[in-house]
Length: 115
Length: 114
Image (tube, rainbow over all chains, first blue to last red; front, side, top):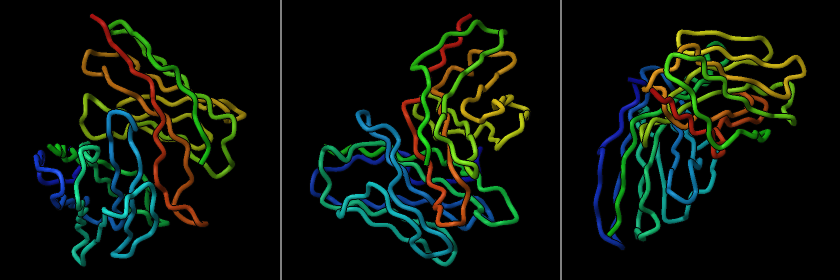
């Protein structure tokens, strides 16, 4: 158990819909990362938040957005869903401070199926 | 971040040591070598990381060559539960403009056989 939690575990929805994925980082971790894993693309970095602020963007579509709340949990919002958005979505967290390790620990993921 | 090259697949007999190689010839001086594994669609699991020196923890050992252009992850006594995709990643830590994001390649699929 990494200490990172993600909900829901599975999500099945239809094209055009909007969903929200939730991530709670390990206690004390300030940084949250979102990754997408699809069959044809492998694991890809989407976006990073650090202490509530967006820190970096990767291959994230404009239909996707994220935020990190004051209690440090994060949500990934996916809208106007397409069949190709079906994938595993992972959240990772790290302490990302000078005094501590920068290792990222991953949650169990949310499997999104768009029908 | 530097790129890595790993063999696509390897087999290992149960109880034997599994040695997984990784080439990272363009690694920079401030980049660490990280190893993660992913067991069948579960979240990637952190294994070990190092900068220059060899490292060992309860899961594995990491051997980094003196020129840092390659490394080997060693699972000393592989079990069936070690069957997974193993990812070698090089990255700089937070700071100096680095975000710390992980760039995953295709990894090595390790099959541990009875």
